Image 1 (cartoon, rainbow, N blue to C red):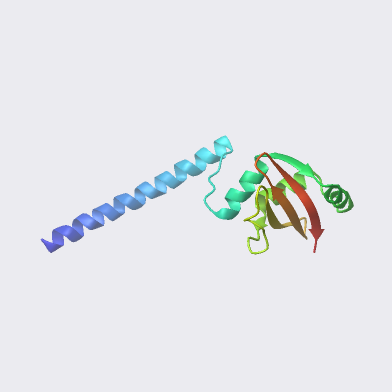
Image 2 (cartoon, rainbow, N blue to C red; image 1 turned 60 degrees about the vertical axis):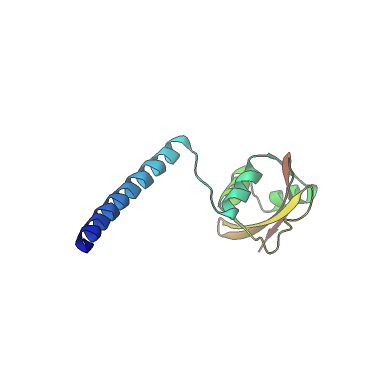
Length: 129
């Protein structure tokens, strides 16, 4: 009786692991084809929410972007690959939350201060370390 259970558990685990491998392969290929990827972590979800809205820039941020020679490709990269520092961010404010996004781009460290409102997002401040 005990040996039967161990044998069935072994078959179950082998089948489960094969299924997980196929599912992972299928979903990875599907996400590459469609350009859609899955965000489960808070950083990823926050940055995806910011990118999904109309983007505006403060005068100070526009000036710094020109000074640092950051174009829209650089901004998009930072808002895609960056890390949100939730300890420095103001996630409780209403109606707009303020996030600090840190990222490296072309061997430089950048810090964006982003106000994320319901309808739009705006980059308020751009710093380089």
